[in-house]
Image (tube, rainbow, N blue to C red; front, top):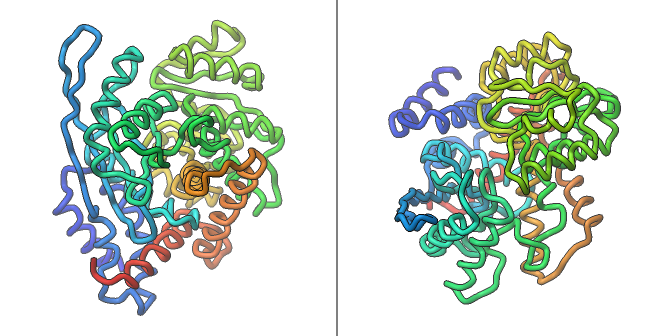
Length: 447
């Protein structure tokens, strides 16, 4: 079996040798899915996984825009349309200097499995640009978004590809993007999710990824006859996902003690309660400030420059920042300090070596394709509401979100429970996500 996996990976590496993030994502899936494929006659000789790792379409384009000084700037835009076997491409847009083909292909590949797990009819895609919104004026961001959509609009549509937000793309950017799409196409349709409530958005969409991550962690703890109430939680990040993960954790009776950004992390042993979290939300969402401003408002807290929060003792760790932020050293610190559950809120934030340590210790560990699927699940609910020209209540959407996260958890249990009873959520999520897409691909033939 190791030879089969390595032979497969050699072929993938030969085609994608300059894309380390993508290769990492494929390796993780291959190690769990190829043994499953080998055990099922229906997949024999179909090369399903090899077809899955090749995007159906990879688009790269120029994005010229004019800054406030009148200078013409140029960025590179992308859209990776990975797999549409079970529905239109669905996945976020990321605006960040680190964006490149490798990162977007890894995100799009993960998105295929994540969207499949939600049970909603959505394929996988991802896109963005190497544009940095930080330090830009609203006018500059508007002009960039309008230029970006001037090209992207050719490749998307409510039944073709429905983007959403991601890092660097929040409600402001979605508004600018949607406005230009509506103007160019002369139609009002649900082509983007994460829209404002007054123009087609869904309640709980901003909160959904963070809420869903905490709901998933609660489901994991329930397998140990435990709850989230009273637990100490470390969270990385301070953007949308981290903020609402902290909010839901507080609502369920936990104590959140850390948040972070690219400059470092803050540790508040008293807990980041609802009032303190409101300060962080204003700081990050309105003032666009840095997390170290927290200790000026709350001097009992400490700021740790250029560090991640994984050396702080906690019961539950929620990495909600970016890929590969939690390495093997961080994993050792978490285990040494008694951490019992790690639940990913970001995409692939835990390195393979760290995951191996968590599995060896047999603590609860959930991969992002399962635990952070709440965001895209609620995007799917927004698409449904747009199609129906209807608006569900907050209670209805939250109930649907909780049900979806419970169903994803159940699927992971079904496919990921080992002989000794330990649940390998990575294996469970990969296989459960694979089966739905693979069966659809087989039914539709070689296309």
